[in-house]
Length: 73
View (spheres, one colour):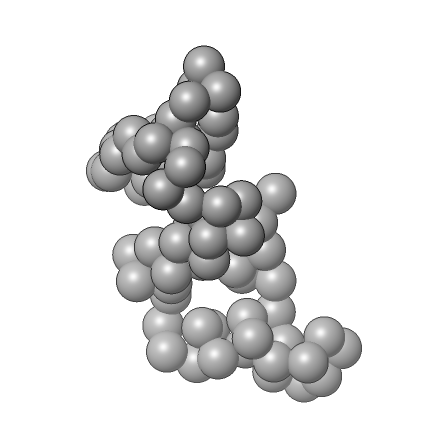
């Protein structure tokens, strides 16, 4: 989960259920919105996905191995 805090920082938080496992505040000029999305995908893959799940997240939508496990909202 990432949010803009005060329009000057990104706040990136990671949770395992209801338990916060990671938090980092980063200056807004240090990461673009696309870069934040890529960071969130990388953190989610590292923290909780199996290798096959990560591959499936990048597979062509609608194929047998595809999944939405790294979809950023």
